[in-house]
Length: 113
Length: 116
Image 1 (cartoon, rainbow over the protein chains, first blue to last red):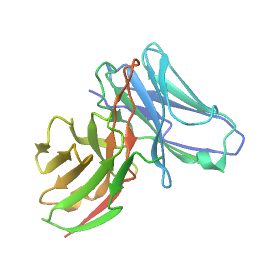
Image 2: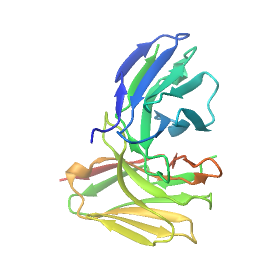
Image 3: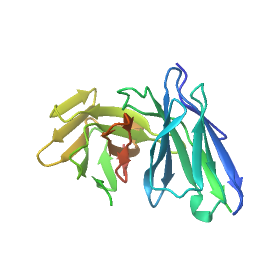
Image 4: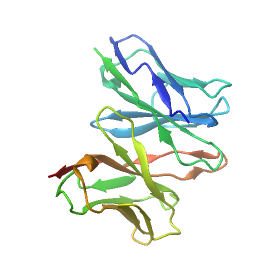
């Protein structure tokens, strides 16, 4: 089976812009979670989608949003980018039903200038 | 509030030695404890996981020891190899009541260097 794929792998944006990141889960996985990884804060949970519905949300401002499509692919959007949004954004997929085992993609490296 | 505390931050081990990484948690509702391995430029890869009804789980050279009463768990890497040099993260999760959602809470990570 193919693993979790994320596009793009690298992105450079300027403050105030918005960005959309994409994640394709492992085939058959219905849950997609997003995490932000920074050297200072480590890995932090953003939100989780299951069957096109946001099922759980972490402590991030409303500038961070996401959605999931009927084929389980997910997108994450960050509006009005700030310098502090520079991070590795990781997507993880799981079965979603008693599916606590999460498999991560390679991440999207976002740099905000 | 850091719910999973991981130590040490960095670890240097001789090839063939034992690497030990420790984690402690606060939330007694946690019921699933995975360890992830991350190489530079890659996403975290699941290494091994344990549930609190088991005190130890072994997979190859990797062993998780779990102490429920102390709310601590640790990763032991036997016969450490240079290829094991990576950052290791412990994590914990619990099923969010009514939602069926699992949210991973991670430790800060341990950078392991195995020297020849």
